[in-house]
Amino acid sequence: MLEKLLNLANGQGKKSPVQLDLTNGEHLALVTGFADELLACCAQPAQYQQLEADLVSRKDEVPLPVHLAAKLAVSRSAVLQWEGPAHLSVVFAMYKEHQRILSSDQVAGGEDFLRRKVHQLQWLFAGREDLTWDLFAVDDGCPEGSGRIAQQIIDADDLGGRVKVLFLEEAIEQRLPVVSPLHKTSESMKGGSVELGMWTAAQQDKSNHVVVFTDADLSTHLGQSGLLMDRILEQGMDAAIGSRRMPESVVIKKGSRNTRGKLFIYLWKRIIAVIPEIIDTQCGFKGFRGATVRDIVPNMLEKKFAFDIELLIKTQMQRPDSISQIGVAWIDSDALSTTTEIQPYLPMLKAMVGMYRHYLEATPAESGFADFIDGLDEAAWERLQDNIPAGITDREPADFVDYEGVTVADLQKACTL
Image (cartoon, rainbow, N blue to C red; front, top):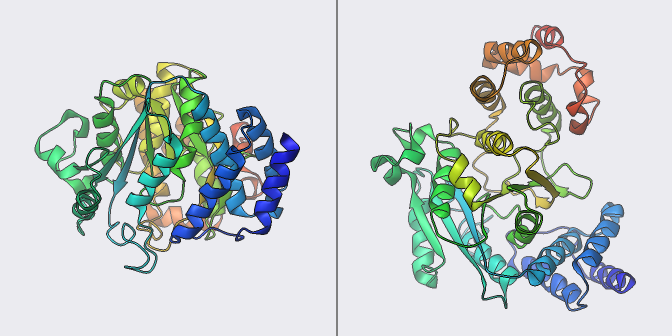
């Protein structure tokens, strides 16, 4: 059977575009078409996993759509094996998504992401009436009315039974505890809205409920949600998180922020030791057991970009070793990105210092790094990013679990160069 799957995947590769255009509906349909061809072989989930591993071993030779199709086949094959019922809630925040939510026919770079997220979930759960889903799009105080535009699409396509729009501004006005201590939407950068969406989703009385948050764009195909759900529902984890830094990850990323990302990871690893094996904290594709969401989302400190790591800290502290990492297919979506010019690394690190001091027991070594980060201003941070020590740039982020060769003194010196 594996040989049959490999032959089919290789045949798909010959007729596949090399890359994947997230604005092109035909490209996205091609991927699910490829996955359906693989699934028509009626193999077992383990055989689809073997196929995926073989393709990853030839990563650069295999077109991206075929890699993604293999991951979708693994995901849906797992879904088809489950005994229901189960429910998936997907949450995403929107800020200045007024163009990307439109189709490419309406605006260059448009992804039509709301409709396509719906189609991806419909594909994943097709034929399983005992497996249900819903989507929560949360307006993060968007000045361009992303939430209003989303509601217009919902009304036009009669999606109201499955898709809901929440407004952070309304939650603040209603003084919902989950958004405390926010007084205005400008105090949130994604985190406040995702927490509101997760909390709202988790209030539903659903059996085997999994709550996933993702990005507004189409970087992560939601057909991969079965990968997260399987770790939670079948393997008993409290959280399953997508990673772009595992051997089985397939990532297409533009830009040149790799060394700065390494610096960010090295520094937070020095102060947040409770989740040592996790490298990619910022991948926008994380799933949590519904009951876990109800436990960890109230009383969150962080309402900005570092909220991911606080969720992981709280999950790990509640039940150690309950977080599973999964290598996913991820395609950078930056044509209409609202964060391309934002470099939030320093504010995120400072927020993590607050988490360290709030949740974790202090040690001299960790406190030294925490004090160093706390003392950085933007000018010093820019100098440090321009002079990152070779001990960091010459290693991979996975090495930073154990490697501690760059000291606070080394970093202080780099800030003065």
